[in-house]
Image (cartoon, rainbow, N blue to C red):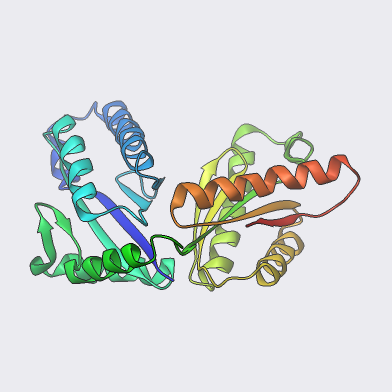
Amino acid sequence: MTCQITVIKLEGYGKWTLKLGSDREHQLQMLQAFMYADLQKYFSTKNGLVFSNRFDEFVAVTNQISLPDHKEIHDKISKKNSEIEISMTIGIGKTPLESDKKISKIKKDKKNQVFENIFALEQEHLQLQERNISNLQLPEKNLKIIHIDVDSSTALIKNLSTYEITNLLLKLHLKISDLFLKEESLTFFLGGDNFMVVARSGLDINKITSTIDQLIKSSGIKLNCGIGNGNNARTAAKYATKSLDQIREYRKSGKTLNVFESN
């Protein structure tokens, strides 16, 4: 079981922003928004999924996306943003956290630059590609993605201001992130009251359920949790969202549960 993570970073960003003068913040916010939109567009067409990490850095789940595919996307993004240098570093590991940890080491060694500003362990990718070809008839479900949302959030936030809601969700994000990081899984805030966890594939529904129960107990916030599996990010995310939808359908029929997994 493997997870492929790609970190996309705007390089030399600080120096470039100074050239814009002091009245620059609106330009930076627009650039980051457009960059995220383009990355999501290009990676999703290849069944990947991109999360905004620190606005000048993005994390993509890129199982089944090859090195030449990365170069194609990099070329498109660079052409649209010629004044900014963009790097991509790809890590492959048994868990999302292991993949992410590999990335900083890979990028430090210039020998790992497979294309201009794209870093990876090329031999690792060749081995993975060979394995994917041999398993073409029965592709592994390497990825597990968890979609979490707040149950009855309207009632929860009715007496809170806009910013107090954000504060509440940031605290919840941190709690979710801390607990799932212990399971070598990465949590991202999707906006609204939604979170997505790129989980290690061996994390079973019993452990996820106990983690969600722990979150509900510590935060006092009711949560729904949909689990999805797939051989690429879009497929796993689709089934995770489908699982959330199934929870809602069960409730309409009088059955109460807050964690469900679609296979």
